[in-house]
Each structure stands twice: as structure tokens, then as C-alpha cells.
Length: 342
Ligand code: PMV
Image 1 (cartoon, rainbow, N blue to C red):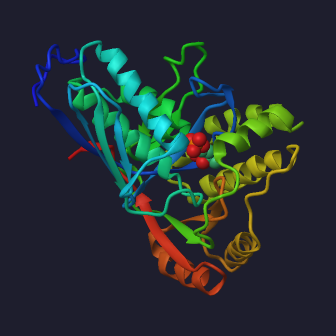
Image 2 (image 1 turned 180 degrees about the horizontal axis):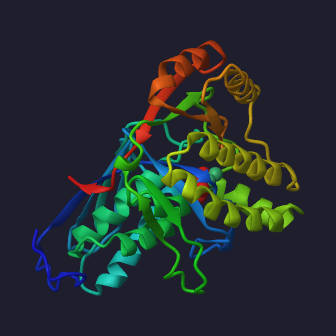
């Protein structure tokens, strides 16, 4: 692979195949993103903040062939179809446009090491890895801001998976979205003993994808304006607690914010409910554990699998109780690092 000076695209490919492979982690939002102000550019109504989930990862390779034709998109061993494929093709198109040369059709292969679409943000890791691999394959130097903006066009939460640790996705004000990207506030080493335990109560694909769920909520939930205002304020409030590694305060905000996101979605028409009875059982257990003195809080994305926030010292106890109370499997995570080229 040849490189040009910082930020400049590769000038000529001359039929050379240019390939790059990147690996990124998913993330779990402590203050959620729920709702777009611009559907095409994927611009949010409010800022959000997440922690990157190691060791889970998605690895993606992109090769620009320099030839005409359709992009070849393979995800988890299968040819991608429908919107899954078109979202990748669209992102590759943005890279071709920025490059301006003759990159040609791409061959893209992506695989994750955790189940997709079960409430774990697999699309976040996938689009972050794709953005890093595609820009690098096109000859651009690493640039986390440009990568985050590109990843955002695939999936909003992917803007927070280009960097590791604790990342804030700034809402931004510009209509073109150039100020709406993920920004690392603390790296993964800041809080190594923090644990995010995903209680897998269901491996089924969710019925309503986040994209459709948030559109319905923005358009029909009377609580939406209150949600957006509150979440923006919570992002500011949680940062000093993360800085101090205050699990109790971080957990309390994360839990409250998850309830508020879901409450806003319940109030949509038709109502949206991502919770299953097992989800509530785990949430209830979490409350009981806390009453017994264990430091554990929950958060929940747009799916049935709760993610419990705890610390390394209580991890084993929380895993055991989770398994006894409805979780078929527990995926243990800790703050993960940046998206990297491999
Ligand atoms: O980026 P998307 O379209 O998968 O939406 C993610 C939405 C939530 O996971 C529910 C919240 C978040 O901030 O990650």
C-alpha cells in the first residue's frame, strides 16, 4: 500500500489493488442516541455518550479493484442483501466521491465475533471498521474525525466506535453534519476495572430496527422533545462522574437514561416495546442485588438484552446471579480500545 501526505488521497491506482483491514469494537451508550434531525445524513437531535466494548469486535477488509462493476459485499460469510448491502455500498460510494479518482468496484468482507441485531450494537462496530478500512484502502491517512463522520453515515452509533474508551458523539449544529462526530473523552485505560455484562435473554433479531423505531418515536411520541432536552443535559452531567470513576453516579444516570429512552418509545404510536419478560426479570434482579449492597446498574439499547454495569470485584457474583435469573449467556466486556488497522 502506498501513502500520500496526511489527509491527501492516493492520486493514481493504475490498476493496483489497494486493500486494508480494520477491526473495531461495538459500544454501549450510557446516555443514548434516539432520534434523527436529518435522516439522510444521520444527524441526531441530541448528543450521546458511550463506552467501547472490548473484547467484542468486527473485522472488515476493503479492497478497491480499480475495475468497473458492482461492489461485492460479504457479511458474516454471506452475500449481503437489501438494506444491509445498500448501506455498505452507499458508504463505499462516499469514499469514492471523496477520493475523486478511479478506485472502482470494491470487495468488502466483514465478520463479527458476536451475534448481530440482538440489542448489541453490531452495526456500530461494523460501520466503524468499514469506515477505517475503506478510507485507508482509498489511500487516506488515519483521521479519526473524518472516519467518525463517515461511520456515522452507515449507523449513527458507529460514530462512537472509531475511538475506544469513553466517547461523546457531539450533536453538532451544522446542516452538513461536519461538526457531528465522536470524540474520545477518556481512553480505555482510564477505568479498566469497569465491567459491562451483557445478559443474553434472547438471540432473536429484534422486530423493529433502531432506524424505524427512532423515526416512529420522533414523529409520534409526545414525550420526544423532553427526551432530547434531558439527554443533552445528561451527557454533560455524566462526564465528571466518569472522570472520577464514580460507578454509583454513572450507573444511576445510565439507568435513568435507559428508562427514559424506552418510556419515550413506549409512548410512540404504534407503541414500541423492546423489552421481554426476561429483560424485566434481569432488571428486577439487578435492583435486588443493589439492595443487598452489590454495585450493579443496568442499561438497555433497542433490544431485549440488558447490559449490567459493575466493577471487576463484583463481576463473578453478578454473572452468577444473572445466569440464575433468566440470562442464557452472559457476555463479559470491559472498556475497549480504538479501531485499528490489522
Ligand atoms: O446507530 P443505530 O442506528 O444502531 O442506533 C443506536 C440506538 C441505540 O443503540 C438504542 C442507542 C445508542 O446510542 O447506541
